[in-house]
Structures are given as structure tokens and as C-alpha cells.
Image 1 (tube, rainbow, N blue to C red):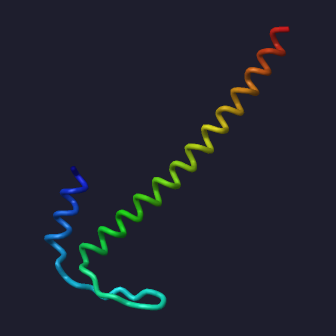
Image 2 (image 1 turned 90 degrees about the horizontal axis):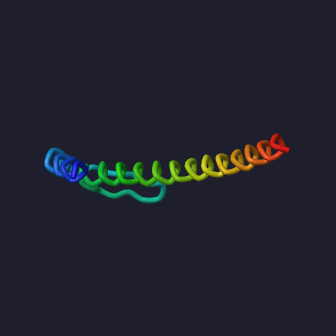
Image 3 (image 1 turned 90 degrees about the vertical axis):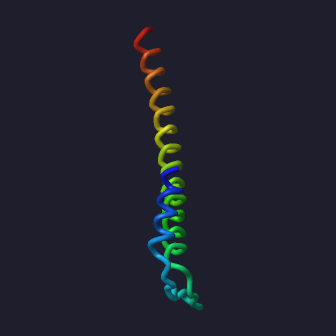
Amino acid sequence: MILVIIAFVLGTQNPAIVKVDYIIASSEVPLASLISLCVVFGLVLGLLLSIGKITQLKRQIRQQQRVNQSIQAQSSR
């Protein structure tokens, strides 16, 4: 809901057309669309990086739990 409100505000406050130069081309797009595209790209990139880090940390937790179990098994003997 908050993102919809932000998108609405961006769309109404930024009606200007801006020129975007790519490596091999250029185009003219509304500023609101460009800002929205950059925000979405940033969110997706952040989510992907976060998922990768969370997966790595979960793997480390599992490895540490195995080490802890083996230490407990050795100490109980």
C-alpha cells in the first residue's frame, strides 16, 4: 500500500520527460517511470543479495550445530 502511494506521488509530482543515454542508444522517458524503474531494480537487487546472505548464514548455522553435536557426543563418553 505504501509503495502504491509513493508511486502515485512520484507520478503526479514528476511529469517531466528526461533523456536517458544508454551505452548504444538513448530514449526519452517520464521521470516518474525512470525513478520507479530504479526503485524496483534496487528492491530486486537487495532481495537477491539478502536471500544469498541468509542462505549462507543458515548453512553456517547447520555446520556449527553439527560441530556442537559431535562435541557433546564426545564429552558424554
